Amino acid sequence: MSKEKIILTGDRPTGRLHIGHYVGSLRRRVELQDSGEFDKIFIMIADAQALTDNADNPEKVRQNIIEVALDYLSVGLDPAKSNLFIQSQISELTELTFFYNNLVTVQRLQRNPTVKAEMALRGFSGAGVGTDADAAGAGTSGSAASADNKAGIPVGFFCYPISQAADITAFNATVVPVGEDQEPMIEQTREIVRKFNSTYAPVLVEPEILLPDNASCMRLPGTDGKAKMSKSLGNCIYLSDDSDTVREKIRGMFTDPGHLQVSDPGKVEGNTVFTYLDAFCKPEHFEKFASCFVGKKVSFSFASLDEMKAQYRAGGLGDVMCKNFLFAVLEDTLAPIRERRAKFEKDIPYVYEVLRKGTEAARAVASETLAAVKRAMKINYFDPGVLDELIAEQSEKYR
Ligand code: TRP
Figure 1 (cartoon, rainbow, N blue to C red):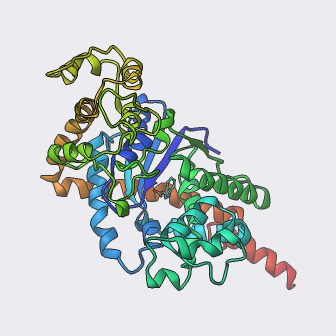
Figure 2 (cartoon, protein in one colour; figure 1 turned 30 degrees about the horizontal axis):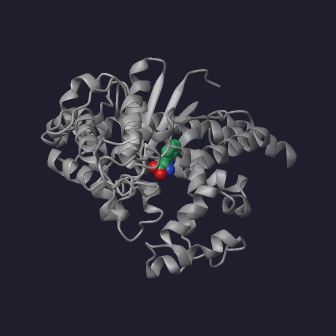
């Protein structure tokens, strides 16, 4: 087994990536990439997983592969250091999944909290598998429920945690940097690894999860203050949004509904402006954007986010000023990303070449793992040497 430090992570290409993805995962990936601590880094565009609940819309997935690739490159993922690839083009992953399927029970999948929550979100009814109250009741609460979803849970969707275990183990990943919503997936992967290794032979590597290190990065709320940024709720700020769009979205952002007059004491907890500042603001921003706090009637000078929060709590600091500052802070991160994106958008052949090369390299690794898996399961009948042994063994038996 290799002792290398290897990262694998990825995203479903169902839309452009937003700042929730950025603070929850992309920013960290770039740091890890640039730390030089890792021997190999694999970043996967999980189109096959996206199809598990978009079977009727492959075009949406196809279109978003390039969007996600552009987002990756524009945040600073560097193809010279990180292997960017497309999941569906590595058939070894589906083969691994097929063998792992035998190591997982339906009951275990039904207990996976992420699968349960996602079924509820998509409005899949629990028909057929719904022995569990949460899963069975999911159909009634889903806002995105379509008639198709009501018909039941696609088998592929239900089993995607197993395919995710294949994604992770195929590359011998030791570290999987993801958001907390993916924790049950990693746990399930670890179980599959242990089961495989104890049943057949110790060939699979048990991965560790790496969560975001700052609480407000764990799950950035939407601009409306709702718990999750999601395309269907229309509460996202996208990495590819232009500056005016970002300004508008911040202007309409949820703050403290009780903060009616500027002079009123304001609440920082649950105030989206401050949650975003927690995630994006750096100490140097207070000097860099000091002019945001210079007003016609009142001016402030803050040295830190804590000081700004204290003033907001005490009253006197208005939402408009806070939002202007947040805009400056966000733009500090987003403007360079946007510039790089514009450059890559002008060179689409390069982007596909990155994906093609990355996929080729990833496939070579996955194919070695698959061969090791088949050896461990002794289903490598025609491997060099194995066939001769098999013939000898069976001939002996029938002599
Ligand atoms: N499930 C992840 C998402 O929703 C995407 C994904 C697929 C993934 N396979 C993975 C993440 C393996 C980490 C490791 O975006």
